[in-house]
Amino acid sequence: MCDFCKNPNTKSIEYTIESANSKIVICPNCITTNLKTLTILSGYYVSEISNKNGAVKISDPLKFTVPFFVTPDEAKRLLGHALLPNEYEMLLKNHKKEEFELHDDFYDWNTYFAWNPVDDEQYIKDLKNYKKVIAKNYPAYSKIKAKHLHAIDVHIKFLEEDEEEE
Image 1 (cartoon, rainbow, N blue to C red):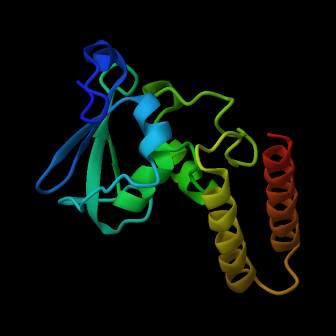
Image 2: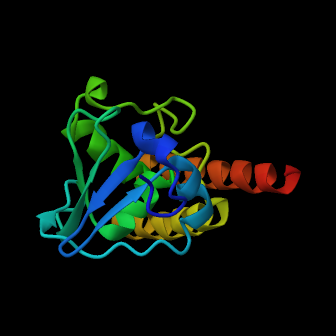
């Protein structure tokens, strides 16, 4: 049963987040309404995205045949359909596509950008920070850098325009 809405009918679609000292059960509806205030404590694991310690275990027996091990921040982005392109790419490298359900309306399969993040504003901020990291770490005259930075700008503009329409 979801710890937030206490609805017994959501059992088949709930996510379980296990950290060092707690276990949170949350349904998709409550993720949408509680993502900004959701507190996820550090766990005992190592993140399969960033290799950082303190990762938690996220499982959903009906969708994922294997659990994900991600940091609390990565967990919020995973649950909110807002992984950064490099994070999404790492999950695809670490898991066979068939091992878990990732709808094609959540992420672009070519660029790895999120299409429908739960929190658009936060995702745009995260993308802007990600852009700064790319700008800093790629060689100055790299064609890959230019294409990547342009793609980020285009996607941010798409999200901002989509947000204005709503």
